[in-house]
Image 1: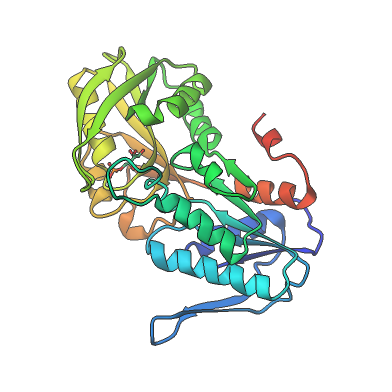
Image 2: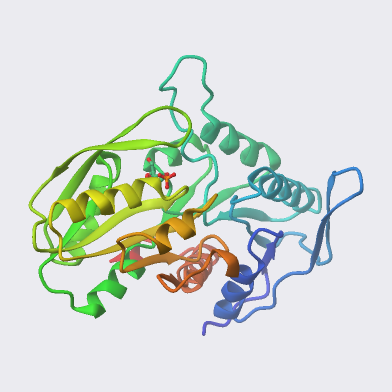
Length: 316
Ligand code: R5P
């Protein structure tokens, strides 16, 4: 493991303490001490128990459920560090909640992904470090430097090691097809694309078409996140109807809301592989779900940002 100069400090709220501890293990530094809790009146309170004056502060906090609480904790922690004269503050947000609300595609709707970017900047974040945004353009919502990491090498290396023959990578909707193309290239496999249509604001979707040759092949469906599970489970059903021989799924962020993990357990998938950008509690896990760690990815990026080294080189 790398050994750090002492100006670096890593803090966390309550969203994913285990991930923050793993990142600190990678960096070989202790996790900074802070109280982050709610008063009886539901107000979040933060007290940092470390000197952060002029230090390079990294606050690790995915804005997963409970999204608003986790976001508020992050904002308040940034404010506390700013007021304590931190030298530089990086918001490390492995999962960027509200990322799906990134465009005005209906009348009178917000662009909340932009609002959250403004909130983080106004609170005092100097930099942002994140993993697999819902859309890369969200980087442009920030007027501070954003480093977007990707878990794709971690996910694809797992499948490379399986040496699956006659594989086809399937983008579960057109929006994800560019990233699915990268997955396909890494796995030396062809790409198929599912044409999906959202049927309203209730999370429901329908499949219109499977574009590409999948019959008799092992399919690996790819998406950035699973919420209700509807998208990937419908995709699996459509692929089985098209005659695939086996079917796997990989996504970066396992949001797994409602009964998504039950849906996955009862689905046609042989295995679902996800990253641990979001905590996956025991009740959401089942024998079909494999979780791969992103702490080395985040730890290495934090080390490089702190030392002024290239982050892009991590992916060469
Ligand atoms: C949508 O554009 C995203 O890429 C995912 O397909 C979506 O967030 C998955 O949601 P669900 O699991 O509820 O279908």
